[in-house]
Length: 339
Image 1 (cartoon, one colour):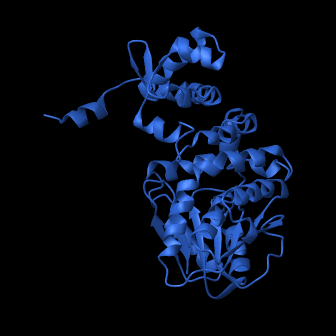
Image 2 (cartoon, one colour):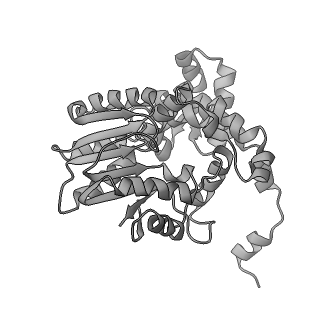
């Protein structure tokens, strides 16, 4: 007799197909709830009428939205009172230090949704998309990305800083490549009071990084260089070079060329650490890192989530001996040490 799990696996159901076809509606509901600040307003419980008054929205709209969020696991409901789940209280309430809601500004930006949804058959057929490569350096979407993803990456930034803090020697000169919001370099600066950070990215994005550096009290040790990481002269003698969430945008040869430039910029004994999503060799696990290649297929000409074997090959072509991967649970990201 088959087990319950085996029986479930053999069951024929349209649920998976239906859920996938309607998945963008869940994103739309989450975007509306974040923009209306529903998760922050609920607190310990509120009715649809109370939320409608607080948001100047139609009670019918708020009721249907909140019920939909209950159905999808974001809220709870007792009688007419909506409440937060532990996860939504942690990640979607603005009062939480782990708030991630601002990421929706980029993830659900019109530019990004068009890129993903308008013609997926074309980027599958072509093996990639012009995607982000077709967006100019001064396009506001890059600022949306930096602003939205800062809170999304805060946990990984703190995890990276904690890892570096365990090393025997503190870095003093640090390069943060494709710094974006600047949080990775900023966390290093907060952890090491003598460290000076040089952040490289597009000029408009670096304005946000500079703002964040001021907010975290490290502006005096936070310098910027505007331009492409492949083209700018960022100097030499770095004790630590960071590559946060950058390599997945390119193919192995392009990444190897960047690593050669990086290697020539290190001080004696200097280290290179990337942050990225690393799937297993089967390319289907763990779920988020494995699925991230689909994001890159839609958004880049040749990028993808690289396995440890891919990263090791990249390292060798870039003049390093190997790449070592260290997961950072509960984050889906990993640290990658080019050695």
